[in-house]
Each structure stands twice: as structure tokens, then as C-alpha cells.
Length: 344
Image (cartoon, rainbow, N blue to C red; front, side, top):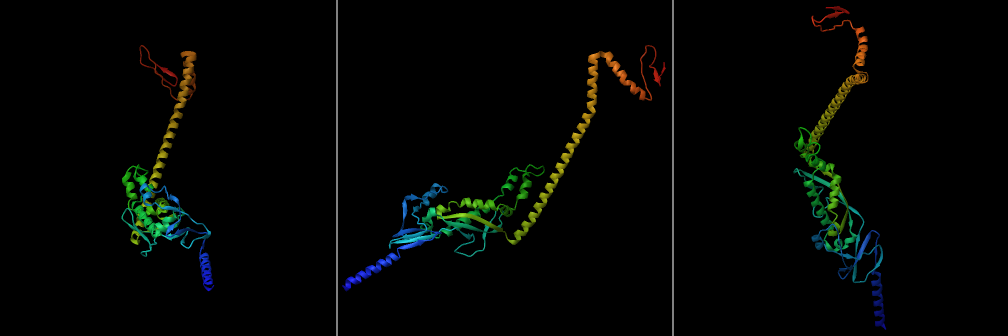
């Protein structure tokens, strides 16, 4: 009886110990997967398929889909182990590196200037690729940060202001007389850091697009890439300030010259319109008189036209102080009339 009681107590103890440890809790911001003897529970033969991966990357990052356990109580057997991960969105500085301490990311621009870049990343564990984050990659966040920094440095080294490039390629300044591509290139040369500062949204959008495949590669989804600060060394910053002042002055001079030219063109157009209107005002009465005379001649003939002309001359003769009339005779020279008196 003593042996049987001991065995019964031992079995009872083992049962209570096993059952007490057979349950585990998954919090609302967590997801879990069960591992049985080193193998995670899978969803059949299904694998991760991401459209952001090419054919070669699909073969390289061939991760299976796992059976994900949501929030709540879950049962496990003694030979099973739960792997629980926090899926909440978190932020991290882009300067984070577990192998070294750094306060900024150094990058070289297209004009060979070394600049410091600071910012943050918002990321979360990809539930669609839980296997890559938990089992496929050692230190997945470190991989993602290394990938992000390499893409960022490549973009900074090749970045060109879209508006400045359009000017160089034949835009507004390229069509200016006396300027052309040389002037546009001179205004755009050596200011890549300024271009980066002015186009931070474009840079952030590019980084987000390039990092869309990190979920399929490393099991981490980037929610946002926020490059907040681009600071060159102090001596370079002073030189850039001088360049900016010069560019602003040149831009102001160009604007003033264009305004003056447009004003002169407008005044010239107005002067031409005024001269044209004056000429039309002087010609209009003559055209009207010619039409009147033609109408009189067509209706009454030459006698009516001669009578009309004689009647129109009477008021003029009344206001004249001196009248000279020339006549032709067969035997003598022309006679002169002064004040209405005839001289043969």
C-alpha cells in the first residue's frame, strides 16, 4: 500500500505540475507560435509570396507560413514551446547599431561632401512572415538597419533635385537668352545638400518604397522612414550659406530683369496700339468722304459731283484770306486773281 500511495502521489504531482504549466497567455499586443520538438507549426505547404520580390529573391527567401496564435489563453504539451513576439509599432533611431556607438549616419553627396543624417524608423513585426523574424534571420532588426543605411547612402550619393534637373535639361533657365544650360548648371552646381534638405519628403518616400520588401526578407515591416536632419560639417555649412546668399541674389536679379523686360514689352505694345488707333482715326473720315463722293457720282453723275464740290468750297472761300487761281489761255500766260480781281 505504501508503494501504491507513493506512485499515486507522484502521478498526481506530475499531473498538476504539467497541467499548471500547460497554459500560457498571449497579450493583445503579442502574437505567438508553437514549436514542437524544434519545428514551428505550419499552415500546410504554404509559403510567403510577396510581389515586391523578384524571382531570384523568391527562391532565396522561401519562408513557410505559420499558425499564429492570437491574444488569450492557449494550451501546449510539455514537448511544445511557445515563441511570443510583440507586434506593436515601435520607433528606433537610424543611428542604432549594436556593434558600435554613433550619433549620426555619415553619407557622401554627389559633390563629394560628407554630411550627417539623423532620423527615425517606425517598424513592426510582420505577421505575414513570422518565420523570418523568429527563426529565419539572426538579429533581423540589425539586418534591416544595415539594409536601410546602405540604401540611404546610395540615394544621397546620387540625389538630384527634380526641379533643378529640369532646368538643366532645357527648362526655364535653359531657354533664357545669354544663359542656356551653362547658366542653369552654374546655379545648380555644388548644392546637393541644399537639394536634399528641400526634398526630404521625396527622400523619405523613396526610402519607404525601397524598404517594402523587408517584410518578406527579414519579417519586419517599415511603417515610416523619417529623415529629420541633414547637417554638413561647420565649415561646409558656412560655405553653403554663402552659396545660398549668392543664389538668392542671382535669382532676385533675374526676377527684376524679367519684370523690367515684361514692362517694356507691355509699354511697346500699348504704344503700337495707340499709334494704330490714331492712324485709323485719321483715315476713317477720308474713307467716309470717298464713299460719299462715289455715291454722289454714281447717282447724279459728274454734274452732281461738281455741284457738291462747289457748294463745299463756298465756306472755305469765305474763310480764305488769299486765293490763287491758275487758268490757261491760247494767247497769254496764266492770269492771277488777287482778292477777287482778275489780271490778264
